[in-house]
Amino acid sequence: MVIELNQIWEFPIKEFHPLPRAKLGVGAHDMIGVEAKELGFKRSLLVTTGLRGSGIIEELIGKIEYQGVEVVLYDKIESNPKDYNVMDGAALYQKEKCDSVISVGGGSSHDAAKGIRVVVAHDGRNINEFEGFSKSTNKQNPPHIAVSTTAGTGSETSWAYVITDTSDMEKPHKWLAFDEASTPTLALDDPLLYYTCPQQWTAFCGFDVLAHGAEPYVSRLDFAPSLGNAIYSIGLVSKHLREAVYDPGNLKAREGMMNAQYIATQAFNSGGLGVIHSISHAISAFYDSAHGLNNAIALPRVWEYNLPSRYERYAEIAVAMGVDTKNMTTVQAADAAVEAAIRLAKDVGIPDNFGSIRSATYDKNRMNTGKYAGKGDVIKGDEKSVLKISEHIQEDWCTPGNPREVTVESMIPVVSHAINESY
Image (cartoon, rainbow, N blue to C red; front, side, top):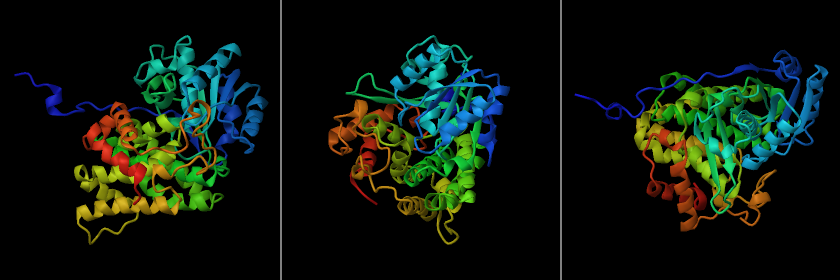
């Protein structure tokens, strides 16, 4: 008798994905020049969104050049990095005869840098050809140091990157790639660099971390090596995010969020994600709104949707978030996790729903600008728009890890509530 693997389990073999070498802690960014020199960098493309006014880029360039490494600055990366950001960066890398990449910022800078490296390694092929799992055929990408200035995506230490395909603006597509070849060579996480992160972005990025911890903890992969990091990161976010938002110079809070980001990425790197991220990708594909903000609005809705499939896990999440569940049933405790997430969102100033977001809602909002000009700065909640977003979710590479089955029909009420309703 022949037994098909898919009759036994959807994920019979699970893979652990190693993380790059990393330095974490106060003063880590001071090592960038020394590290670049020791890695053999001679002429590096420094990729960033700009970080204008922070002084961070100027300081880091000084430290790099002091060690004799030349720097070519590419500071045109947009939030939700676009395919043309990657292709322009790769062209500049080739033109300037660079031999390495340094990314400074949050996930947008790191993801774009990963994409640039992949394009360079494949003789200028379009980055949109690399969506999905392990599409690189040349694994020898340029070396890469990633320096984080936000506690959010964890992209500086993961094998994942996300790019928006803008080739058809009637149907823009934000896609995800998982590729060992794109993993940075070295990650530098220094909480001192987080001090200038705006209050709103600290909150948005913090919810990205919470999603990174929660999704692998309830994932249908149920990957045991990821669970400890996942639940511990949730506790760190619950303990430190409020303080990091409202007391930005609090070193303990910033260190706590730094560790939460790094640990949560260790969790999802092998344990998978779910439809919190799928919804976020879809919303930003159509409207170019901030990824972390999208995650924050989607998160309690998705938790509520997933509860019946993982009551016990969500009850454990409630405990990690500081809820006293001793006199609660498992179902009550799971419900309390959703309430705790809503409380945290309200405390740090997350808007109630997507429909309440406007271009003036937060700093550096790029809605209705660039290629998105004319799309409007209101996220529409009509039937046609909700359907388009729900269909995009179905195509997302994060969706298969969701613990509860996802269909276009099952996502329509979730998406509609996230756009039109408040808790």
